[in-house]
Image (tube, rainbow, N blue to C red; front, side, top):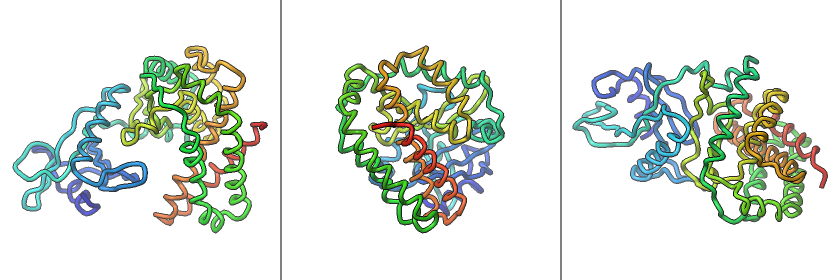
Length: 333
């Protein structure tokens, strides 16, 4: 489907016999049509270095995988439903029209309860963080152990791809921030070489598991029992990671919003419930993982700035680069 078709579907389409009359939210790789009762997630027909949604069959396959994987976290994921078109009429669900695409159907959650929005208001409390810590640690302890070997070149290349945003960083943020990128890449390569033995040991110890892969506040709704959603389905390597990397992402996200004390509360209880910090070196790896996650978020927002031209995206990029630099300075090689 394309932007025009998605717009027509949201405005004039039906789910079975009920008008959608929905609003559209968009990411780089998907559209989400929000109605009063449901959220319909539709994958864009894109092919990138790390995913392939280019054909309807592939999009259906990954819709099914998304449903299966995310049901590990919550019950808001309902089913996969076809999108049909007949004589200009758009329908999600059963019908006579030819199948154009597929959607993941979910229960609609209250937007104001999404954790990133609550964090911006400063309304996230200790009790909510402790509940999340318990929920995530329980899931991690039961998650499938993955023994895929540590690939130094793959990890290094992923980090070094930050250089791809250096031209826009230099243009919009200046030489100081361009230098942060160079320094971070040099640091990362030295760090990985120095600690490669421990990265490999942790895999042998069973700390690399099939987890969420994209655990940040934008993928959590803060109900009494938090709802975690939208884990990575399109690339197993992004989801099958060291649990330290997973919780580092969440803690980095809290610290991005200035909530250092909440990050400390989260990690302290998590470590009590799941003994994944076994050596002093593991504490250093945890900081490196926060640095690497800040790297990824800086790149995501810089690429969004290139695509949209929105200045605020570069301001967010600037904040992530500063946070990344802060983490780098916390580690002594």
